[in-house]
Image (cartoon, rainbow, N blue to C red; front, side):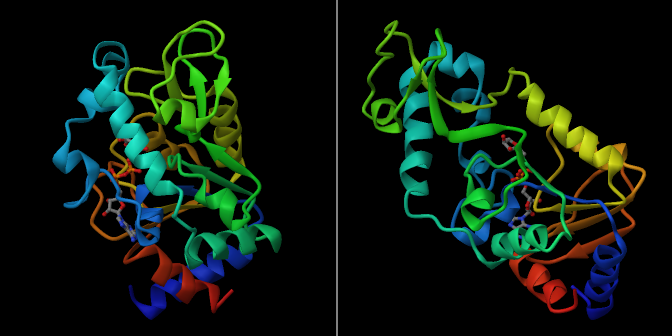
Length: 238
Ligand code: APR
């Protein structure tokens, strides 16, 4: 992260009239939540198809439930960090119009962000996979089945092989189309269709990421660094 880059991003934020922030798992690692594809990420240890897919839910429910229960229990002690709070403050001050996130941890909302589009759903909401009946997370963690139809309980996250929630996607897409600035933070941009969003705006695009990201999209500005540190530095200039 160079001083000139944070100064440039601060100027872009101040001169933008419609700013969208698009986040991935790298936005939550400094709150203690592992990401997926970094060297200490979930998918370095586990094949996602065995736990985070429709097949896993249908054919290997015990492992599916263990994976998501572990993540749910860990989230009970997780708090948003300063970077989440800065984004919420910018929304409050009219500098950010929408946060579109791939994260299912609810940390943006916990930090105070209101216009949050959860493109990959939420791990905090449990429902019956058969009838859609809502259930408490404790019921899922303890292995109970649906009270209404005895079906399998699952978190309302988007599994590999499932479609994204249409309302969240449409709303995020409209904001991206209107945006004159899209700031992408903490994502490898490896998962379709979110990976396509930066290319769908006519506005300027900025990437803040710890590691290089292999993407066909050419960002107007790329800042290599940790989300919390970069957001803190930019916040001092806006
Ligand atoms: N600051 C900035 N970037 C970070 C930080 C940090 N503190 N920590 C990690 N990163 C970067 C990593 O370098 C990596 O490029 O964040 C990126 C996270 O990428 P992934 O682990 O692939 O996470 P994400 O892009 O959100 O994955 C998308 O994949 O498995 C699915 O549903 C899951 O929503 C997830 C989707």
